[in-house]
Image 1 (spheres, rainbow, N blue to C red):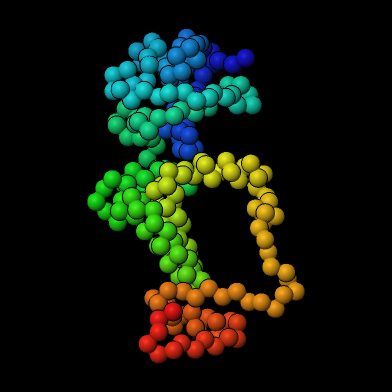
Image 2: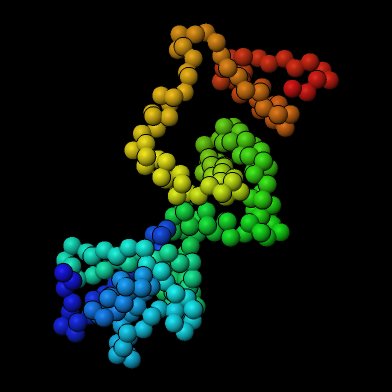
Length: 237
């Protein structure tokens, strides 16, 4: 049972699927009934004193995914599946501080994906997954050899290129989250299915990088593993 205020109104927070708050609206019993019936957001206009479908004039209709109440039953949280603007000023969100990039990983992925058809670096990378994969390999190596004070920068590059690779292959962040949820956030499950060499084995597996980083490979192997790599002249590993 919803606890309406003295005027028969309840405050409703509107949020998108990625967790970004789009705005706040007020609803009465009639607007809630219309919202549930049509699965489109209807609000109560306190100024006009009537129920209005959100987007009736602008076309920015908000499609309902689910509705929940807070613990006191006097406020609603409404999740909508719409990339359309919510603010009457034409902005995606009524709030000025949050941005679609800063909201979370999913909105970052959507922000990058919105540029997939543009003649830009991110657009070309996303349209060519194999190129994205090559960049991931390059960025991963940069993380490996980067000093501690550059780790944030290099890891950011790696993450962005991984997102571009996922976008190019039609894999969403939600797909990744669902997979992790199915594992119950237990990474060991994926390890259980992987054949791991006998820990007592004396074998050492070394990955030789492409010719772009031979000096870094050799330096890393010698300093960290105590192995000196000798490269024959005129031969590119």
